[in-house]
Image (tube, rainbow, N blue to C red; front, side):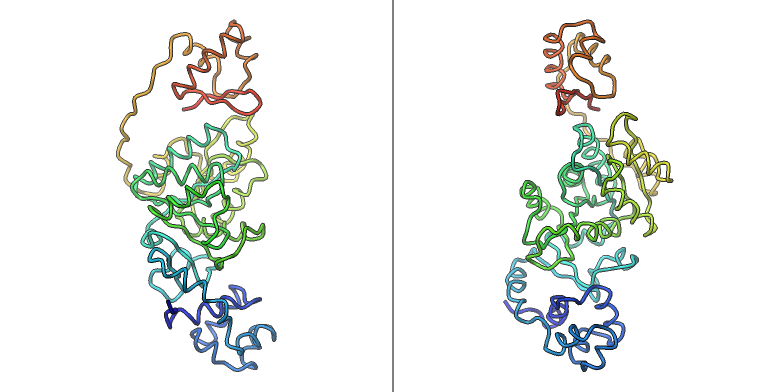
Length: 361
């Protein structure tokens, strides 16, 4: 397949080494179109970019690297959107550094729908994962497409919840769209491509480079009306996304947690800085002025015995080890383990690393 004549000049420029987003946009303002940029003289171009970049442009741009892109576009689910396209997401035009091109895979129409970012720790707790997924489903049913970054932990749970709701999910990734990172999320990425959308500003073949993840974060927040942080450590990358959301004029929400959990520190910091504390998805929906989601169907679960329920009361809402539960309940460790197994089957308790157990909502 040959490239569309309108798209090819954009791609030729985007593949030129050293031509960043800002320089690309500066050239567009100065010359009016990619075609005019490629036709400009070296002297005219050198007023805006380095001599090396100007030489690459006058040399015709990166024609030789476009064959894989043309092959990728043979798939009807794959798209490339430029700043000149009506399909370009309007919220990204409001941020400081909109990418000149976006690669997209899946349901392109989702990029024009109202969105909410849901982000958090890669090393999330079972409770955090369950919270992220349930919030995402409710948010999706309320009419907001859930945006996240396809990372392990909270991001993955948010995508699953968004896909389960009415408004689906968008994954903004830091690699080319022909690469799935992390590889453990390959199945999830395929689900998002089939029922949601994958988006990247990076050219095909771009590997997972550490410097690209913070750049990716500005698009997660930029696409969204608000950003919800579920779990985050004090130095979490999620706090970078939340800061970007604030700078972009988006709402920031955070879910509080236990004062003893390191994964609550980031959320508590955001709340101290002015993020809106939320306890239910309805809090977010109301703050954004949306209609509430329809009530979800109640799923039948096995009911724990009276003894297991009593142990659940002793567990409280912070995680603890078996010996602590035994001391609180007056039961032997073996009896506690039996009751914990019953509570796990009922979906009320999850086992954590280090022999700890945590109550689930």
